[in-house]
Amino acid sequence: MQTIQTVKAVREAVRVWHRHGERVALVPTMGALHEGHLALVDAARAHADRVVASVFVNPLQFGPNEDLARYPRNLERDRALLETRGVDLLYAPTVEEMYPEPAQVTVEPGGLAIRWDGAARPGHFVGVLTVVAKLFNQVAPDAAVFGQKDFQQVTVVRRMIHDLDWPIDLVVVPTVREADGLALSSRNAYLTPADRLEARRLSAAIREIQQAWVAGESDPGRLGSVGRAVLEAGQGVAVEYVALVDPVTLETPRFADATSVVLIAARVGTTRLIDNAALGQHLGGA
Image (cartoon, rainbow, N blue to C red; front, side, top):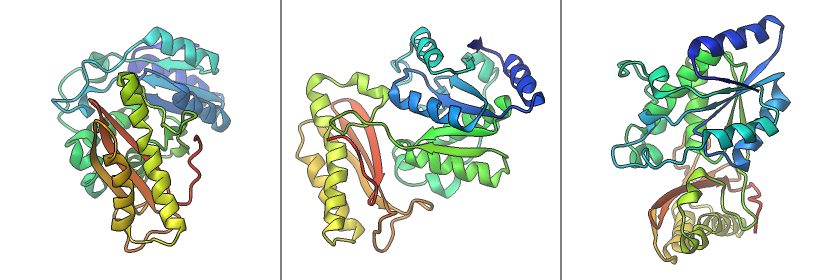
């Protein structure tokens, strides 16, 4: 596996593969890799001849009071994990390589980012789309692989690909969970043992909402209240939002159906966690 840190070098490497007619998939990450990321790599291998994984902690998507400084970083561990899954190229640019000067032109996500995480984290999706756009231009992938856990992120990236006419296939991989249902996340490393137990409430809330829907409840507000009650019964759990949304528009539907997506964000102790699932989707885990 090659490790490359410059835009020039990654473009040259991918250009050689494209000249030989090989299909290239990109897996963008911020490192601190876990089995959820490796599932993305496995999906990339199924959709392409060559896999590029990027590791870059993007400062543009962190707010002034967020966890940029303490975000977990261990490039050597990440490299070893990626190598075991057959990644062809690790692209690990520095901040100076990605942003040699302060960005003046950024990507505006529009209405899809007004609510939910867009409201909770102002400017976050501008940072996400800007760095993803740069990675697309630098790597020129034929496919890009993202995880469903970041559902709103996937939605705005899909819209960017469509609106800006990138010839890229978007592959979305279902959320990977622990045996007890907790969605895998790099931020799980922040959880204390007590917090870790309470964090299970996010997936439990989704299950309760799904069960209420199966039992006949279709009002998005009442379904959201079912999940909120599960979360608020916890110790040290602060709910940011529980929402039922249309999977394309992210707006609240008049009536929930099997395709409606439950979006949850909550702080467990000091750690912000998100989770989601469609009402008709099996969650996995306990």
